[in-house]
Amino acid sequence: MLRAGASEAFSPPAEAGNLAYAQLWYYRDNASVEQGPFDSASMRAWYDAGYLPDHTEMCPSYYGEVPTQMWSLSELYANPQAEAFILASDALVAPEAKVVSEPEFLPTEKFEGARAGYAFKNDHYGVGYYKDVVPEKAVTFDSIEEEKRAKRLKATKLSGHAMPKFDAISS
Image (cartoon, rainbow, N blue to C red; front, side, top):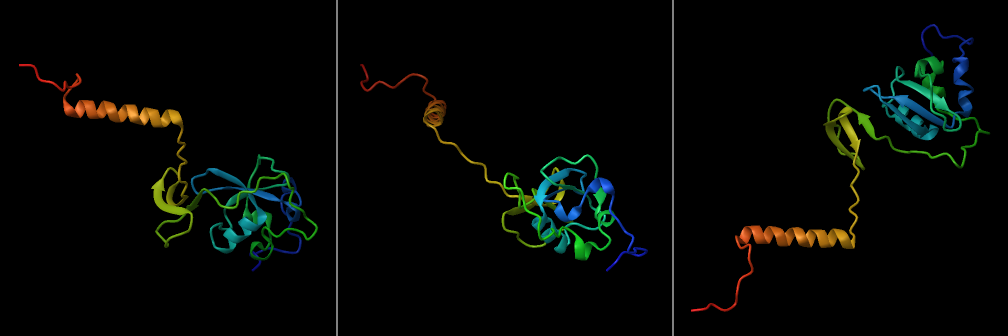
């Protein structure tokens, strides 16, 4: 559906460049935190799912450059539903570009069911789904030895014996 008042003369801001060749995108989330870069296909999927309303501020990135200015989706496209994040047929994604396929945070006001790879909570970005990252535990020789020393120290404190016990009792 075309915006009210939109006409054939609609043109996005010149500073945004040719959006049909924008390989990557940045956006500003509900907490005003800049997110990105994300590939056009991911942005389109999130837009279709309703995660990126037309008032969301965003900026195209052609080679991974960090944006200096952002615009709302409705400022970039006359008809976002039909045009947003659709690459031109001859647009190629740069092979050296690091493409992140899943955002760190998906804002939502209430729990909407389990989402693979995400945990629902209220954290530094607000209420929503946060990327569920399991910290890697590095096991090294030194970490095992430190754990052994800590266990011995704890056992000594719990037993109440600072000195080793003697096997023989003298009379």
